[in-house]
Length: 318
Image (cartoon, rainbow, N blue to C red; front, side, top):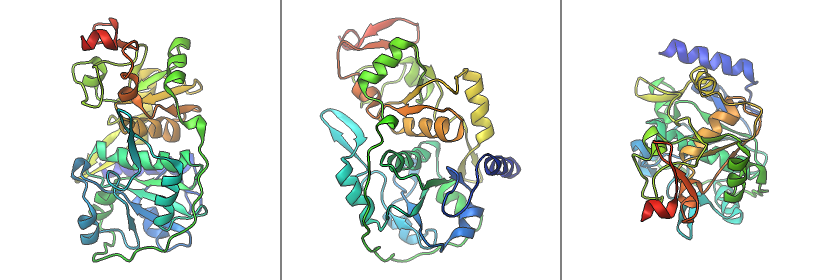
């Protein structure tokens, strides 16, 4: 297992340079260990209850030295508007949140999730995407998360962490990374790729999220589950780029075509977006933030089920 991961890391290093002020989208623990203490490097621990990843108490018990903590689920990275959960928070609120963590516009941010499961990886991917959508490109994800760091034997700190000094952070919304419902409908009508990052049961309509009003998927979409390239090794979950690219090829995605990633509430979709855009070589990927939670708010919207039939949201509800 570790040999495959090392090969994947080597392939990633070839694909893009990895250094302190401009890291590749996904970095290994060895790289981070070498960079700890570098000026302008912020290690952001975002562990939460997802996949039993941890919380603030777990962070104080064991963490990467010098890291800062912000709960993915509780700190305000996402918000509910209307009946749609998990949407991107207001830019001003995000600026205050990020600045309160002592992160400035010229800092390089390493996002560290728990590393305890494939859904947990989406936490890191969603916050990575949030930085990108605010125009902050100096961001990367630690492959394997904190579990991988600890499992590989790197130094662990403990005890109460000092609050960082507030920094000035300014974001500029990057509209091309966000797909609206209207844009998704236009992409569907044009036959452009729509990628459903949910597990197969949600795609077929056999399983329904409580965040959506009806089961099924957007007609014409393909299923590329968020967890297909995440592999467990010694208690930590690692993303394997070679496995990812094989899956992309198997699905037959056109790497040059405009592509939209979605899920139920924009969490698994963030993982899908990250994998397609940042590692998979697709040139124009957006994320449907509202995903199926927003799509199913309108009774007239079309839905596709496993048998290939297309019906409206209203018909499914009634």
